[in-house]
Length: 84
Image (cartoon, rainbow, N blue to C red; front, top):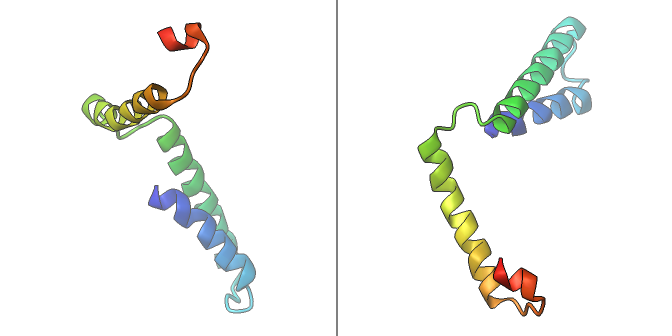
């Protein structure tokens, strides 16, 4: 997640502070690597590459328990939704 946030920050830094970074070739390399890293991290997060089944289940428990609690306390009148 940190890599996904850092990649665009590097791009913004190079674009906004271009007066400080005189070497255009190095800037192009930095931008290309930053874009590549951003894409790799984005795809890794989307596919849950480094997440085991146990980690996935541990993350889902609070998510679903919160949803169940919200549904119990909601003022629902539709009988079909109540049965869910």
